[in-house]
Image (cartoon, rainbow over all chains, first blue to last red; front, side):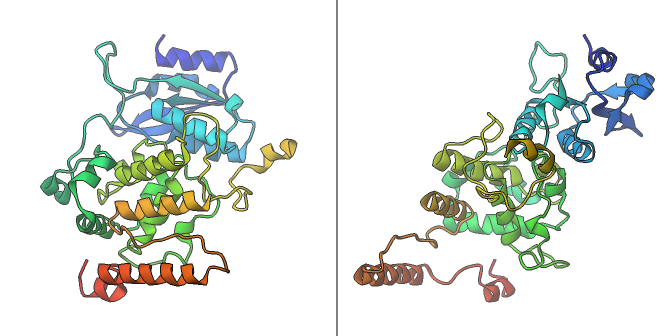
Length: 276
Length: 64
């Protein structure tokens, strides 16, 4: 059954109120919410290698309407993100209906649907030094000594234009208040962005939370190898705390939000009432 | 938990090339000798490593 039929069935069976997928606009696939009011539009539903954090849109929608039933296109990375969002009560699993699409290339699949399949080699520094986007943190540790790593990362961090694209695209960035916008921590209106505080703050917040979808790195206009950095913090969390984000439904033992939630994630209040 | 959190920061600093500049030690208020020893050792270690490369002056001079 192809994806359009699948979604149509979900609408007919009244399982979902809105379906988050992609639609072509001027040659680009953009995220789009399909509704049962306009079933004809479903013909335009497309899946390609383009990715977007649809689950982030879902959290914003359910923030406004907690009982909205949402259908969503999901690859493996989306699934991990959804698990994490369920864990942190940003979404209710019973309100989410998943339609799986291809993720990795295989002869059994007609086409791989992910933009992250080939290692990219953009960024002049990276070209010179032969570090690609899909590098593993361990290889960086082996190849470079302490000083080399330092100058490498400072070079990368200095490229930041503080567009906040990495945070805005991130499916698991859901705090109501963001440290990166805190004036006493990150000075507003200056460049480069508080090297290395800006990126280390984000890296620390990604520890035990990043589900390694790589969208931040794709979004970054300065080609900072963010995925590599966040892979490292997750490796540390995995080593020290024995936790891998997005796998199960357990909260990370390492979290900056703390055991008692003072920084209230949204839209937590409507769920927590019955529980405590 | 503290030791795990500090280990996390140590590992992260190591990854970006600031290894060895964070130290954690449990010292009771009755262990003056140990306190002196730890502080002296760490000061020596840092002195050998030289100034913090993130020092504002170094940044301005373009040392980074």
